[in-house]
Image (cartoon, rainbow, N blue to C red; front, side):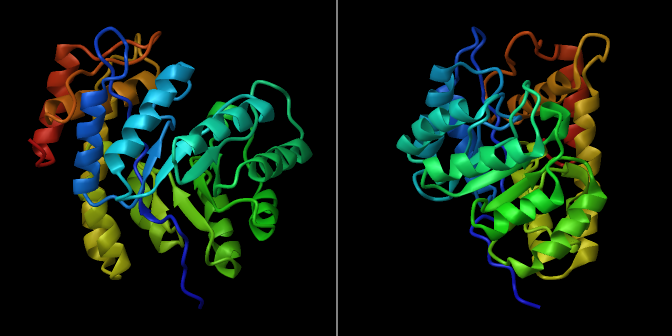
Length: 309
Protein backbone atom coordinates (compact mmCIF):
# COMPACT_ATOMS: atom_id res chain seq x y z
CA UNK A 1 0.00 0.00 0.00
CA UNK A 2 1.24 3.50 -0.84
CA UNK A 3 2.30 5.39 2.29
CA UNK A 4 0.30 8.50 3.13
CA UNK A 5 2.07 11.83 2.69
CA UNK A 6 -0.36 14.68 3.42
CA UNK A 7 1.11 18.09 4.09
CA UNK A 8 -1.05 18.48 7.19
CA UNK A 9 -1.26 15.52 9.56
CA UNK A 10 -1.01 14.53 13.22
CA UNK A 11 -2.36 16.71 16.02
CA UNK A 12 -3.99 19.94 14.81
CA UNK A 13 -5.89 21.59 17.68
CA UNK A 14 -8.61 24.13 16.83
CA UNK A 15 -7.19 26.95 18.93
CA UNK A 16 -9.61 28.55 21.39
CA UNK A 17 -9.78 32.35 21.46
CA UNK A 18 -9.09 33.68 24.98
CA UNK A 19 -11.11 36.79 25.79
CA UNK A 20 -10.77 39.48 28.42
CA UNK A 21 -13.70 40.05 30.82
CA UNK A 22 -14.93 42.86 28.56
CA UNK A 23 -14.96 40.57 25.53
CA UNK A 24 -11.83 41.62 23.69
CA UNK A 25 -9.23 39.18 22.38
CA UNK A 26 -6.76 38.48 25.18
CA UNK A 27 -3.62 38.62 23.06
CA UNK A 28 -1.23 37.77 25.90
CA UNK A 29 -3.19 34.64 26.83
CA UNK A 30 -3.43 33.65 23.17
CA UNK A 31 0.34 33.93 22.79
CA UNK A 32 0.79 31.75 25.89
CA UNK A 33 -1.69 29.22 24.51
CA UNK A 34 0.14 28.96 21.18
CA UNK A 35 3.42 28.41 23.03
CA UNK A 36 1.74 25.77 25.23
CA UNK A 37 0.37 23.92 22.20
CA UNK A 38 3.66 23.98 20.32
CA UNK A 39 5.45 22.77 23.46
CA UNK A 40 2.88 19.96 23.54
CA UNK A 41 4.12 18.76 20.17
CA UNK A 42 1.23 19.70 17.90
CA UNK A 43 1.79 19.44 14.15
CA UNK A 44 -0.25 22.48 13.11
CA UNK A 45 -2.70 25.04 14.49
CA UNK A 46 -6.26 25.60 13.29
CA UNK A 47 -7.23 29.21 13.99
CA UNK A 48 -10.81 30.47 13.82
CA UNK A 49 -12.57 27.15 13.93
CA UNK A 50 -15.65 26.31 15.98
CA UNK A 51 -13.56 26.09 19.17
CA UNK A 52 -12.07 29.45 18.23
CA UNK A 53 -15.55 31.03 18.34
CA UNK A 54 -15.28 32.05 14.68
CA UNK A 55 -19.04 32.55 14.39
CA UNK A 56 -19.04 35.02 17.30
CA UNK A 57 -16.02 37.19 16.55
CA UNK A 58 -16.09 40.49 14.67
CA UNK A 59 -13.97 41.01 11.57
CA UNK A 60 -11.43 42.96 13.62
CA UNK A 61 -11.30 40.30 16.32
CA UNK A 62 -10.70 37.63 13.68
CA UNK A 63 -7.88 39.68 12.19
CA UNK A 64 -6.35 40.08 15.66
CA UNK A 65 -6.53 36.34 16.29
CA UNK A 66 -4.71 35.55 13.04
CA UNK A 67 -2.06 38.19 13.69
CA UNK A 68 -1.34 36.79 17.14
CA UNK A 69 -1.36 33.12 16.15
CA UNK A 70 0.79 33.52 13.04
CA UNK A 71 3.16 35.78 14.96
CA UNK A 72 3.44 33.46 17.95
CA UNK A 73 3.81 30.35 15.78
CA UNK A 74 6.56 32.12 13.83
CA UNK A 75 6.77 29.36 11.26
CA UNK A 76 7.33 26.58 13.80
CA UNK A 77 4.13 24.84 12.66
CA UNK A 78 1.65 25.59 9.85
CA UNK A 79 -1.38 27.74 10.63
CA UNK A 80 -4.74 26.90 9.08
CA UNK A 81 -7.32 29.69 9.11
CA UNK A 82 -11.05 29.15 9.19
CA UNK A 83 -12.76 31.27 6.54
CA UNK A 84 -16.27 30.43 7.59
CA UNK A 85 -19.06 32.55 6.16
CA UNK A 86 -22.54 31.99 4.82
CA UNK A 87 -21.86 32.39 1.09
CA UNK A 88 -19.05 32.11 -1.44
CA UNK A 89 -18.21 35.79 -1.98
CA UNK A 90 -17.97 36.37 1.77
CA UNK A 91 -15.68 33.36 2.16
CA UNK A 92 -13.42 34.56 -0.66
CA UNK A 93 -13.19 38.03 0.87
CA UNK A 94 -12.19 36.52 4.21
CA UNK A 95 -9.79 34.13 2.51
CA UNK A 96 -7.93 37.00 0.82
CA UNK A 97 -7.61 38.75 4.19
CA UNK A 98 -6.31 35.60 5.87
CA UNK A 99 -3.82 34.97 3.07
CA UNK A 100 -2.50 38.51 3.48
CA UNK A 101 -1.87 37.75 7.15
CA UNK A 102 0.43 34.88 6.28
CA UNK A 103 -1.58 31.74 7.03
CA UNK A 104 -0.54 28.47 5.41
CA UNK A 105 -3.94 27.01 4.49
CA UNK A 106 -7.65 27.78 4.55
CA UNK A 107 -10.61 25.88 5.99
CA UNK A 108 -14.15 26.43 4.70
CA UNK A 109 -17.54 24.85 5.29
CA UNK A 110 -20.31 24.41 2.76
CA UNK A 111 -22.50 27.51 2.41
CA UNK A 112 -25.14 27.82 5.10
CA UNK A 113 -28.32 29.73 6.00
CA UNK A 114 -29.17 29.76 2.30
CA UNK A 115 -30.72 26.65 0.75
CA UNK A 116 -27.95 25.03 -1.27
CA UNK A 117 -27.93 22.37 -3.98
CA UNK A 118 -25.06 19.84 -4.12
CA UNK A 119 -23.85 21.32 -7.41
CA UNK A 120 -23.66 24.71 -5.68
CA UNK A 121 -21.59 23.25 -2.85
CA UNK A 122 -19.22 21.84 -5.47
CA UNK A 123 -19.02 25.23 -7.20
CA UNK A 124 -18.50 26.96 -3.84
CA UNK A 125 -15.29 25.05 -3.09
CA UNK A 126 -14.01 25.35 -6.66
CA UNK A 127 -14.49 29.12 -6.66
CA UNK A 128 -12.70 29.54 -3.33
CA UNK A 129 -9.76 27.43 -4.50
CA UNK A 130 -9.52 29.38 -7.75
CA UNK A 131 -9.59 32.72 -5.95
CA UNK A 132 -6.83 32.15 -3.38
CA UNK A 133 -3.54 30.34 -3.97
CA UNK A 134 -3.45 28.41 -0.68
CA UNK A 135 -4.33 24.80 0.17
CA UNK A 136 -8.05 24.54 0.90
CA UNK A 137 -9.57 22.17 3.45
CA UNK A 138 -13.25 21.32 3.66
CA UNK A 139 -14.85 21.38 7.10
CA UNK A 140 -17.63 18.80 7.22
CA UNK A 141 -19.88 19.86 10.10
CA UNK A 142 -23.52 19.27 9.16
CA UNK A 143 -24.82 20.09 12.63
CA UNK A 144 -23.87 23.73 11.93
CA UNK A 145 -24.38 24.08 8.17
CA UNK A 146 -27.24 21.61 7.58
CA UNK A 147 -25.40 19.79 4.79
CA UNK A 148 -23.30 16.64 5.04
CA UNK A 149 -20.52 16.70 2.45
CA UNK A 150 -21.12 13.72 0.20
CA UNK A 151 -18.25 11.28 -0.14
CA UNK A 152 -18.39 11.41 -3.93
CA UNK A 153 -18.22 15.21 -3.82
CA UNK A 154 -15.13 15.15 -1.60
CA UNK A 155 -13.45 12.61 -3.87
CA UNK A 156 -14.22 14.64 -6.99
CA UNK A 157 -12.80 17.80 -5.45
CA UNK A 158 -9.79 15.89 -4.14
CA UNK A 159 -9.01 14.28 -7.51
CA UNK A 160 -9.23 17.67 -9.23
CA UNK A 161 -6.81 19.24 -6.73
CA UNK A 162 -9.45 21.62 -5.37
CA UNK A 163 -9.20 20.29 -1.83
CA UNK A 164 -6.02 19.44 0.09
CA UNK A 165 -7.91 17.73 2.89
CA UNK A 166 -11.04 17.48 4.99
CA UNK A 167 -11.78 17.94 8.68
CA UNK A 168 -14.61 15.55 9.42
CA UNK A 169 -16.85 16.57 12.31
CA UNK A 170 -19.93 14.91 10.87
CA UNK A 171 -20.13 12.07 13.38
CA UNK A 172 -20.82 9.72 10.47
CA UNK A 173 -18.24 7.04 11.21
CA UNK A 174 -19.37 4.76 8.38
CA UNK A 175 -18.92 7.52 5.80
CA UNK A 176 -15.55 8.40 7.33
CA UNK A 177 -14.30 4.83 7.03
CA UNK A 178 -15.48 4.54 3.43
CA UNK A 179 -13.77 7.85 2.63
CA UNK A 180 -10.54 6.57 4.17
CA UNK A 181 -10.70 3.56 1.87
CA UNK A 182 -11.39 5.71 -1.20
CA UNK A 183 -8.53 8.06 -0.34
CA UNK A 184 -5.93 5.31 -0.58
CA UNK A 185 -5.58 6.41 -4.20
CA UNK A 186 -4.75 9.98 -3.09
CA UNK A 187 -1.95 9.67 -0.49
CA UNK A 188 -1.34 13.44 -0.37
CA UNK A 189 -4.88 14.27 0.72
CA UNK A 190 -5.30 14.87 4.47
CA UNK A 191 -8.14 13.07 6.23
CA UNK A 192 -8.57 14.54 9.72
CA UNK A 193 -11.09 13.61 12.39
CA UNK A 194 -12.67 16.12 14.74
CA UNK A 195 -13.96 13.34 17.02
CA UNK A 196 -12.05 13.77 20.32
CA UNK A 197 -12.92 10.49 22.01
CA UNK A 198 -12.37 7.95 19.20
CA UNK A 199 -9.17 9.27 17.63
CA UNK A 200 -7.41 5.94 18.12
CA UNK A 201 -10.12 4.12 16.16
CA UNK A 202 -10.08 6.74 13.41
CA UNK A 203 -6.30 6.53 13.07
CA UNK A 204 -6.52 2.75 12.88
CA UNK A 205 -9.17 3.16 10.19
CA UNK A 206 -7.04 5.42 8.03
CA UNK A 207 -7.18 8.97 9.40
CA UNK A 208 -4.05 11.09 9.01
CA UNK A 209 -4.61 13.05 12.18
CA UNK A 210 -7.06 14.74 14.51
CA UNK A 211 -8.46 18.21 15.18
CA UNK A 212 -9.59 17.86 18.81
CA UNK A 213 -11.00 20.80 20.76
CA UNK A 214 -9.83 18.97 23.89
CA UNK A 215 -6.33 19.19 22.42
CA UNK A 216 -6.23 22.76 23.71
CA UNK A 217 -6.40 21.41 27.25
CA UNK A 218 -4.08 18.41 26.85
CA UNK A 219 -1.97 18.62 23.68
CA UNK A 220 0.67 16.37 25.23
CA UNK A 221 -1.90 13.59 25.64
CA UNK A 222 -2.94 13.73 22.00
CA UNK A 223 0.74 13.80 21.02
CA UNK A 224 1.31 10.59 22.97
CA UNK A 225 -1.75 9.04 21.35
CA UNK A 226 -0.58 10.00 17.85
CA UNK A 227 2.95 8.74 18.51
CA UNK A 228 1.65 5.40 19.79
CA UNK A 229 -0.50 5.01 16.67
CA UNK A 230 2.40 5.96 14.39
CA UNK A 231 4.54 3.17 15.82
CA UNK A 232 1.66 0.69 15.72
CA UNK A 233 1.31 0.39 19.49
CA UNK A 234 -2.47 0.29 19.55
CA UNK A 235 -2.66 -0.82 23.17
CA UNK A 236 -0.81 2.34 24.25
CA UNK A 237 -2.96 4.43 21.91
CA UNK A 238 -6.11 2.95 23.44
CA UNK A 239 -4.88 3.59 26.97
CA UNK A 240 -4.18 7.24 26.17
CA UNK A 241 -7.51 7.61 24.39
CA UNK A 242 -9.32 6.11 27.38
CA UNK A 243 -7.72 8.73 29.63
CA UNK A 244 -8.68 11.51 27.22
CA UNK A 245 -12.24 10.19 27.01
CA UNK A 246 -12.52 10.54 30.78
CA UNK A 247 -10.99 14.03 30.58
CA UNK A 248 -13.65 14.95 28.00
CA UNK A 249 -16.18 14.77 30.85
CA UNK A 250 -15.28 18.40 31.55
CA UNK A 251 -17.84 19.35 28.89
CA UNK A 252 -20.57 17.92 31.16
CA UNK A 253 -19.80 20.35 33.98
CA UNK A 254 -22.01 23.20 32.72
CA UNK A 255 -25.60 23.35 33.96
CA UNK A 256 -27.70 22.28 30.93
CA UNK A 257 -30.59 24.41 32.16
CA UNK A 258 -28.98 27.55 30.71
CA UNK A 259 -26.06 26.37 28.56
CA UNK A 260 -26.03 25.15 24.98
CA UNK A 261 -23.72 22.33 23.98
CA UNK A 262 -21.48 24.93 22.35
CA UNK A 263 -21.27 27.00 25.52
CA UNK A 264 -20.65 23.92 27.64
CA UNK A 265 -17.77 22.78 25.44
CA UNK A 266 -16.10 26.15 24.93
CA UNK A 267 -16.67 27.12 28.56
CA UNK A 268 -15.13 23.86 29.74
CA UNK A 269 -12.05 24.17 27.53
CA UNK A 270 -11.44 27.76 28.65
CA UNK A 271 -12.11 27.02 32.30
CA UNK A 272 -9.69 24.09 32.18
CA UNK A 273 -7.03 26.22 30.50
CA UNK A 274 -7.50 28.88 33.18
CA UNK A 275 -7.11 26.22 35.87
CA UNK A 276 -3.91 25.04 34.21
CA UNK A 277 -2.54 28.60 34.21
CA UNK A 278 -2.42 28.91 30.41
CA UNK A 279 -5.04 31.65 29.93
CA UNK A 280 -6.21 34.35 32.32
CA UNK A 281 -10.01 34.21 31.97
CA UNK A 282 -12.74 31.80 30.94
CA UNK A 283 -14.83 34.49 29.23
CA UNK A 284 -16.90 33.34 26.25
CA UNK A 285 -18.67 35.39 23.58
CA UNK A 286 -22.27 36.51 24.14
CA UNK A 287 -24.93 35.25 24.28
CA UNK A 288 -23.03 32.39 25.95
CA UNK A 289 -22.17 32.67 29.63
CA UNK A 290 -18.90 31.72 31.32
CA UNK A 291 -18.90 28.75 33.64
CA UNK A 292 -19.30 29.67 37.30
CA UNK A 293 -17.00 28.70 40.15
CA UNK A 294 -19.01 25.63 41.15
CA UNK A 295 -18.75 24.33 37.60
CA UNK A 296 -15.06 25.28 37.55
CA UNK A 297 -14.50 23.26 40.71
CA UNK A 298 -15.96 20.18 39.03
CA UNK A 299 -13.63 20.70 36.07
CA UNK A 300 -10.62 21.06 38.34
CA UNK A 301 -11.47 17.72 39.90
CA UNK A 302 -11.56 16.04 36.50
CA UNK A 303 -8.25 17.66 35.55
CA UNK A 304 -6.73 16.40 38.78
CA UNK A 305 -7.89 12.85 38.13
CA UNK A 306 -6.39 13.08 34.63
CA UNK A 307 -3.02 14.09 36.08
CA UNK A 308 -3.12 17.64 34.74
CA UNK A 309 -3.06 19.63 37.98
